[in-house]
Structures are given as structure tokens and as C-alpha cells.
Image 1 (tube, helix red, strand yellow):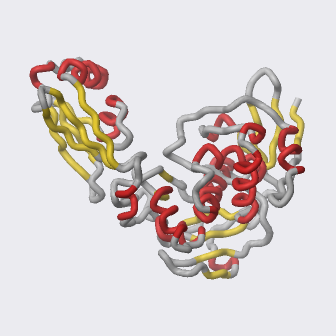
Image 2: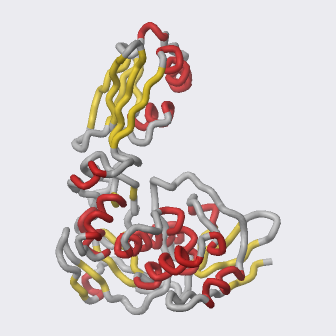
Image 3: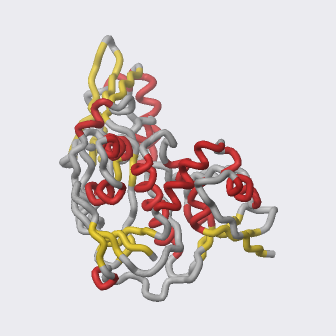
Length: 338
């Protein structure tokens, strides 16, 4: 049996902190922490917000938001399909609180958290389509129950969600893939033809992040075991310890320095395949040798596409608004309330 639960959040008081607990369920984990945000619904009218990188947001009429859903659902829900307890519906705006809390540090600037809320809402809307509802399992996101957040974290995330209620990001009339990551390798990555709205944005402030530079090392035997996990699946090729690291060659990097193709022996792998096989925080890496061990220096944390949370937060400290932050990392897009 499906039941509908409405919970409304008001950042100025603590009563909503209690009422949010009306719907329950354990922490739902997915694989998209560094890959995609989620989105919400609600909001009034079809006013749009436009702007430029680092510029001031400009409110424009709906005619400038080509392709926006003119017949948007009156309400949107996430259906909690968590198994034995049956299904329940939660308003998207309320669901965002537990979602955004998992995606970005609560101590970040409020404008940065607002931007993340817009990304999260956009993801949910995109997965939802025109139906007005989406299964939680289809979102593939991490989620934390609001009652586990603590009063101050709840209040802060709730304020960010409320302040951006209904806002989503569109490019050429379509909802974007709202990609984000924790720290870039010094610049975000270009999206190419598939995601032309992803611009390479310089993020010099990321150099100061504790998550910017990482050092790894393995014995040749340890590294061979890890690499054979992917080379074996690629046709039975076995990497011998004595061949390392000479048998490894970076075949291609993109403009931001991330490895896009890695040659191991006669086989070619993506930079991400090697990254995941070795448990590295990003695919911006370089290998070397030191004291008989194979070393690896890695820059950044996450895939490097889209919204750089740390870099955005450094700009928010300088007074940038959430609209300006979004336009800095995504170009030729429209922020629109739906």
C-alpha cells in the first residue's frame, strides 16, 4: 500500500525538525556520491535566473527558458521503495534535506550548499521525467535520515533547500547532468559534445585543499595483484612484478591533466579503470619509482567534471552568490523555477 506523507520545513524554527521524522527508513547508499546530484520540485511560476561566470544573476521571463516544462506536475515525490516496509511518498523538497546533507560538508558556506541543492534537485527532476514521481532506488544516491543530522546541520541544509525551492538547471531546454566533485586537480574538465555546458574552470584555490594532493606507493608484487584484476578481465594478460612500472604508460590526458587512456602492456584502459582498480581518489595521476617501490601522485578528489565544491566554497567566502557559482562551472545554462 502506498501512502503519501507531506512534511514542510521552516528553517527558523525547530518544530519541522521533529515533523520531518514522520517518515523513516535506514540510510540508503548508492554509488553516485561523486558523480551526480539530485533535484527537487515545487516553486512558483516560470521565472528564470540567468547570468554569467562570476557575474550577477539576472531574472528573466519564461520566454528565455526555452523547453521548460510548461505542464509541470503540481507536486513531485520520491517514492521510498525500501523493501519490507512498503512504499511511501515524500515531497521532493523534503527529501533533498537528507540527500544534500550526504553530498556536501555542512560547514561550507551557505551559498555553496544552496548551489548543491540546485544540482541535487536537477538530478531528481531529470530522473523523474514528466511523471512527477521517481523511485528512490532509481536515483542511485546516498541519503541520510534527517533525524540523524543534528539540529544545526538540519537547520542549515533546510535553509539552503528552502532558499532555492524549485530551481533547476537547463541547457538548450533540457535538464543537465548536474555533475559535481569534491576537489579538482586545479581546473575542471570540459564536457565535450555530450555535455557542452561543462566548461573548464580554473580553480587555483583548490591547491590549498587537504584533499588536493595524495601520495601512494606499493611493492611491485602488490601493484601487480591490483592491476591483474583489470588486465585479466581484458583478455587474460598477466602483469609480472618485474615489469613494473615500465610496462605502464599514460597514453592520453585531457586538457585538465586527467588520464583518459592508460596503456598496460599491449592493452589500453581508461584512466578511471586504473583509478578504481588502485583505489585512487581521481584519474589525475602520475607513476614513478622510489626506494624499490612504485609510487603514484594524485591530484584532486573526484572525476573533475562540473561543480567543484571546494573551489566553489572558496569563491563563496569572497561573496559569490549561488547563482554566480553555478554559472561559473556551467556555461550557457538557465536557472529556472519549476
